[in-house]
Amino acid sequence: MIEHIERLLKSRIGLEAESVGRTVIERAVRQRMSALGQQNLEGYWTTLGGSTREQQALVEAVVVPETWFFRYPESFNALASLAQERHAQLHGGRPLRLISLPSSSGEEPYSIAMTLLDAGFSAEQFQIDALDVSDKVLEQARKGLYGRNSFRGDALAFRDRFFHEQDAGSFLLDERVRTCVRLRTGNLLDPSLFAGEPSYDFIFCRNLLIYFDRPTQVRVLELLKRQLQEGGTLFIGPAEASLASQNGLQALGRQQTFAFRLAPAQTPISAAPRAPAPRTRPAVATVPRPVPPSRPRPLGRTLSAAVPATVVTDTWADVASLANAGRTDEARQRTEQHLQQNGPSATAYYWLGLLCDAAGQGDQACAYYRKAIYLEPQHREALTHLAAHLEAQGDQSGAQRLYRRAQNPEVGEGD
Image 1 (cartoon, rainbow, N blue to C red):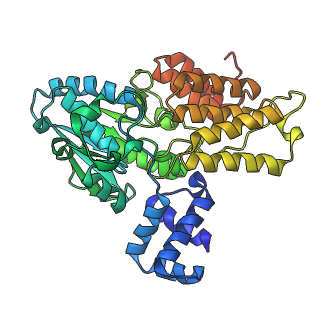
Image 2 (spheres, rainbow, N blue to C red):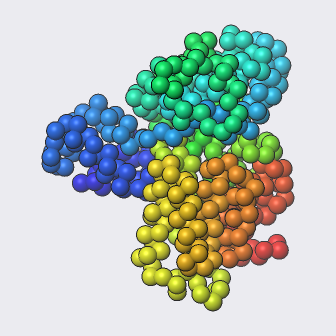
Image 3 (spheres, one colour):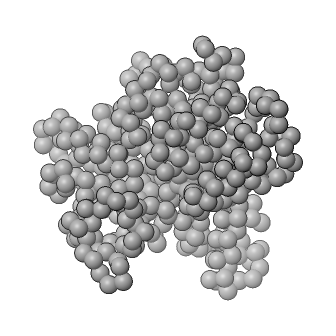
């Protein structure tokens, strides 16, 4: 019966069950059954099939947002300068159009608004849409009330400028920021979603595609490309850069921004390898599910010889579960523990790279991807992630060399 529910979630919001783990879906189902006072799974399935409201409630139980203000700060620094350039190109003919999806509880779209206000824009010079599948998180965003978990790191001067501290350590966002953002419910898989809507100068769609299967990833990416103005910019998550690079988008070359524009028409775009699906969660994610490694280079005591296959599988399932729940520090500790107990492993180094990417530690992520490739020269996912980093840094030739290796097992390390 859980398989039927997984298929329903996939058809409704494109969720690939493996990207969050079956335990997350099972827990959400139990929560909804308890809320409805139902004891029988078959009975709940009947209720679910006949109620769009209950389907939405289940989606909201599965989608556990993990976000905070000015996550990936390099992206917002880039937005400030890119928005000024774009505004100059338009000669003030119309407001800038921006969208954040999924918007979750509002931290990202409100960060966009604060960035533009700090950059000298007036509220009349830009329009921000914020879209999410969950009514529940959008209601939180409308209230504009945030706890300390929404403020991370040391650069918190914006909180003094745009928030009013309330009782019990909560902070209320200034009305002038909230009025800059139009919050609405929407599903990227709805073909009529953007009907009648003009295209956007800036699209933020970070850590969403990693929850989808490959066909859905490509379908959504094509939709986003259609909604992007010529010369517009798409901001995506670190783990999604290789997918963008292989599907008609070109990195701007600004390190750690993961900002892309439509590639010139004459640029050949080769078929993309199957992208890994990292995770943090369905509305916001950051770290992928584990990808079964291809045969590693023999190193004496290999991973497969060191422990039974079932133990290896459980290890990466545990890491994925921790990462999906936003417990990335624990996921990293589990991976490092595996290395200590079982020796070098391409899969372990690949996971450490993903977790560093999720934390915005791009240089360290690249170092781990290189270790994975050293142990397993044709580790396709490590190759594509490292290539995306090189492309974002402006090393086009190095990136293309790695992409060719990822796509063609016959291409050697020196080709």
